[in-house]
Length: 306
Length: 144
Image (cartoon, rainbow over all chains, first blue to last red; front, top):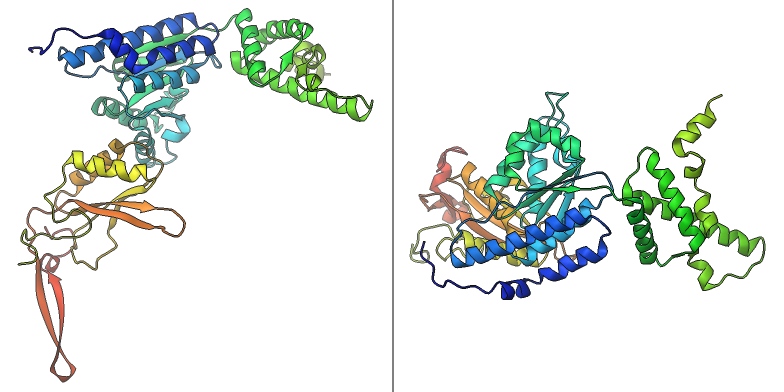
């Protein structure tokens, strides 16, 4: 193919798409996740260069943009998906800056003939933007051969192929279970261009997240509360159902509850005066009262046994 | 007919114009979505002007943001009923309006035989006039 001009200003293309702002936001808003940020930067660069190639006529077809985010719960998959949609939108790969987040329940029906319309409805809603399928591996249940999930997968595959310009699909789920999912659905695996793996947060990062979250809710933690939080994180990580940043959010929510209760009791029973500072301060006691320190769920079960 | 030089059914919007292209349809859908209207696709093989209730193709599409999904549905309908009339409707749910706000034909049979004038003699040698579509002489589904 002959090209009209041989030069293109990548810098101008970058400035006009404003993706740097999103990438900076990604760096600021998300703690840790270094490999993920690296991958997103790579993908953004690739998309930008492809856009330049498209403009010069070197490349004819838009690249496949479907992605898979794997990682444990609470590692920021949904948050990054929203940012990804923003990047894709700014670069003009999708027309609408929207993410439709669905799970198996939204796609798979309960009886024969129910699945196809349900899946198609979701796809129609997501058209022009990003379809984010959380816990995607649930779509395929190998133990039940009459499961309707397979039908949904087939419709999805067809759309991912035929409507590449209209829809970007992002699958998310645990790393190992997504592996099994792709093994049993090779068609799905081959249509996904980018696999991004989300690592777990370490303790310092979780503490950093605590600070950010408390800040965004306009709460302060004092020094003792932080060290309590550090112990909390260490203990919580050993217990079942640990969900990274989501567990931190839940812990903070419960601490807020205890703080409110404490302030209420102080004011009513002890007739103490409450200042604005008191209202936004979470103390060590609020965190230490958590049942995590008594062994959490397991501890309760042990205690109940005669 | 003198009033209808193309010899085609003219109902709804844009029906005196050449058939809309997919790009034009997309632009119309975009306009309707921008207004917050719900869009549905309907089909029929009875072209009588007083036949207002056409068959719905799938459910009306609420909460859509992009025309691509609706165009996909239109194309599915065209594939299923290549020789039917297909129209796209936009419905406004604004309180006090609550009615269709747009309606235009996006697919029509290749051959439209048109309408005949029927005369009925009634009391006192009065004549009642009505129109009758030649196509509807055949049963539903075999008309075009």
